[in-house]
Image (tube, rainbow, N blue to C red; front, side, top):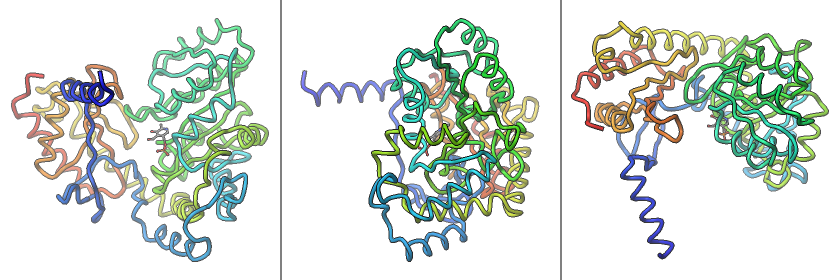
Amino acid sequence: MSWLHEFEERLSALDTQQLRRRRRAVQPQHGAHLLVDGKPMLAFCSNDYLGLAQDAALRAAVHAAVDVYGVGAGASPMVSGHSVANAALELELADAVQLPRALYFYAGFATNASIVPALVGEGDALFSDALNHACLIDGARLSRATIHRYAHADLNDLASKLAASTARRKLVISDAVFSMDGNVADIRGLLALCEAHDALLLLDDAHGFGVLGPQGRGALAAAGLTGPLASSRVLYMATLGKALGVAGAFVAGPDTLVEWLLQKTRSYTYATAAPALLAEAVRAGLRECLGEGGDGRRAHLDALITALRAGLMPGAHPAIDAAGWTLMPSATPIQPLVVGSNADALGVMAALQARGIWVPAIRPPTVPAGTARLRIALSAAHTLDDVSVLLQALYDAALAPRSAG
Ligand SMILES: Cc1ncc(COP(=O)(O)O)c(C=O)c1O
């Protein structure tokens, strides 16, 4: 069989299972409105939770940075890529999450995929929540440590797996906010187990930083575990392409661990540094996030979450109940509406798209089989009217005849 023929067949199999993903070319308009393949759409699919991606202050910071630094970083941070802007950002990020030191990376996926192998290796034990993000899973596999997958958010399961392990080094890895469910991990519970079993905790707060806790300082701050209360056994990771509106990621924690990661993380050493223009944009985003403007954005976001949930809760509308759709229990901007089959999820997505509304259908293997869902992502860029428009479209789609799939 030829290579091309084999992959054509594999692509057709994706079509048959309705699992082929398609990209759209988008251009922002105003608020959460986009031009998608040239067609206007109201979008509920961006992780730009604070609505900073189009913000004037961030744009101005980029223009000013380009005048000073030009466009590209030119080299790894270990050579000449570590700009003055990147260095300043690291100090500000550490201060924001109230942890001793931070290290700034060019992308979140690469960060997790490579810090895990820098922390543990063959003979060590890794404990991973069943719903962790793909980059933590890839990092775990690359590390060659023994992987113990514990049931999602099940601290009893984690406790028994930790107790049964005789490995000298144990690392627990967990999303802080689960990206497809929107629920928040029990961080105090995780940390208590790590203390009891001498394990290190790596938390990925990609979806919590900027949104959760006082001034959006993130999930650790929301759990009251920063500053003097921060444990020497927590490494905190967050991304900068979601609520902060730009791109990149950082890891923060005790100086010794961060220094070790600086020395041993392959995607840090062997990759071009994030350009200073991005660092300056993140710095501007961080100022807004921590300031009064950020509080206003989060308050608005909370109002949007409340309005959406009020319209989709059981009993809120007969069409949603009759369709058997379930809104997952989430207090974050990630509001998943489980519709069940892949065909139904795609059908609802198409019905919304026909009305100029874009909500992505998330299907296996990204989520467990039978739980295909619409992942509604809210942003401070939305208005309450946008939420009403979405609710009405969902009610109408729920009343439409279901597909056989
Ligand atoms: C939980 C989680 N961690 C990490 C990442 C990767 O971050 P980035 O988009 O910066 O590569 C994502 C991205 O979507 C995510 O949802």
